[in-house]
Amino acid sequence: MRTVGIILIIVGIIMLVTRGFDFRKKEKVAEIGPVEINKEETKHVGWSTYAAGAVIVAGFVLVLVDRRKK
Image (cartoon, rainbow, N blue to C red; front, side, top):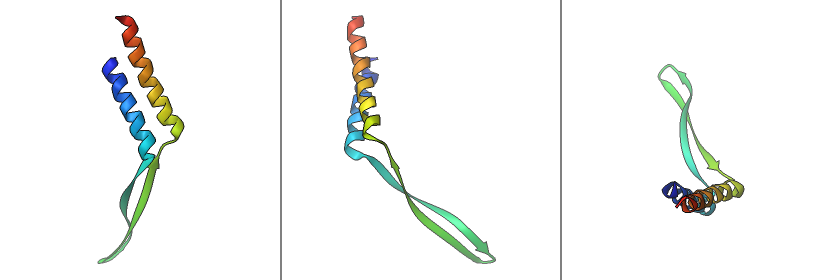
């Protein structure tokens, strides 16, 4: 439990720092005979500050619960 809690705390801190990431997606729009039309689109995956805070709090809770068991 303690290891999972520490991992959650680290992931939460990374989420606070990065705020999300971008990736490119290439998709085929049309194909007419030998001619092919493609579209490349950049998409953003982001998360809120509240989600990062919730992950950090969950990590601290797991670490504290593990300490109380001992």
